[in-house]
Amino acid sequence: MKIRNEIEAAVEEGVDLMVQGGQKRARACWCELCRADVTALALSTLPPRYVTTISHSTLNGGAGTGAVTSAILTSMRKVSRRPKHRHSFPESQSSRVKIINYIFQEGFSRLASYMRRPGLPCTCARCQDDTLAYALNRYPPKYGVLHAGSTKLPPYHVDHIRQELRLIIAHAGAVVGKSPRH
Ligand SMILES: [Zn+2]
Ligand SMILES: [Zn+2]
Image 1 (cartoon, rainbow, N blue to C red):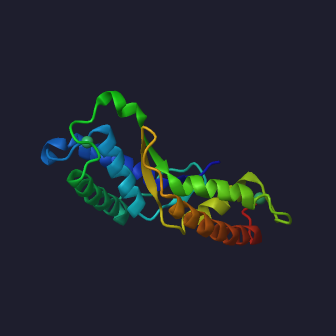
Image 2 (cartoon, protein in one colour):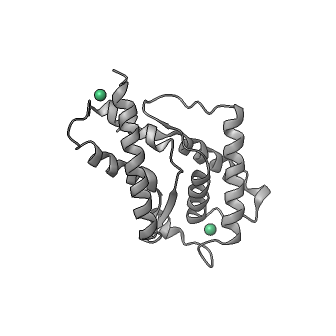
Image 3 (cartoon, rainbow, N blue to C red):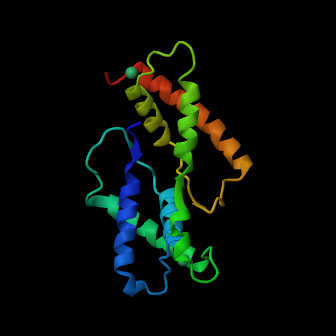
């Protein structure tokens, strides 16, 4: 699959810049866990921009970067108020912190079952990517942080998301099927 949310790179870059300028925000904790929390939270509040080709970021300048910066700052304040760790976060656990794109994961498996439907006009890789990107760009993002196996979405929430994604992917599939890019 050649599909990614361009906003991810923008947020990671923005967080990097803030970590480097850390002396000005001495009160923020930038351990691996808090950093992942800030990133996941910011990504969950910014409208996603899934693209299906390997292209250069289109976020340079303009309103894009401003929105990214303010989402990171808001997330940073929230995370600093209630960090998930009590004392300092042990560096030995850093490698176990992972950011999860829930909506992409769920969308990806819903897409697989959609593509097994009989009678679809085309199921080539390109149409699959286009279908998923179309759907995910119209669905609120939800990122989370996996830390030592914890922090999963509550099951009722997952069921709800799955149902909605199933519908939106069917819609996206119909749109892409009507005018494929090849
Ligand atoms: Zn921390
Ligand atoms: Zn196709």
